[in-house]
Image (cartoon, rainbow, N blue to C red; front, side, top):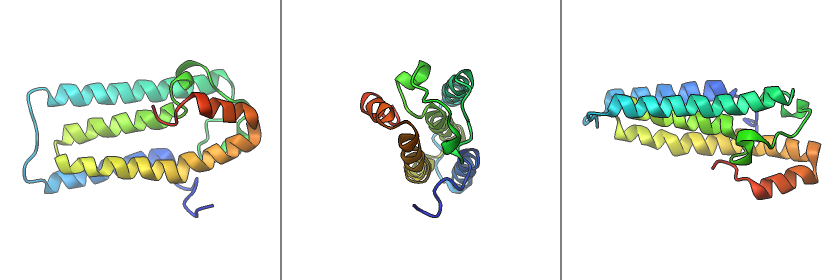
Length: 152
């Protein structure tokens, strides 16, 4: 297992990514602001918060652990609600929030952070979680992975 696997809390990861986008935007020569920039960024931020909250809510309803650094404490496999469409709605919500921040900070160069964030989350958060959850729930989780995509 990688030394970074399950070490940096996802909330810290998204804060770092947004700070990086902001820093890049301060270096940007040609911002891409347009008439609906604030509206569009607000819609992405809102959508991201809603998607993440829906995922968190399903975990709470199932009375299972929401600690992303310790997925081996999961007491049930959540496959209902938003989990019928994405296996990682909380992380998908973070991606939507990051897109909203990129738009708000109006820097095309900020978009380079997006694939870096997704790659980091996939490699050091999601894949290690998947290995643990599969060891906990076995074939039930394998079948779920075959039905529902990792992101969208």
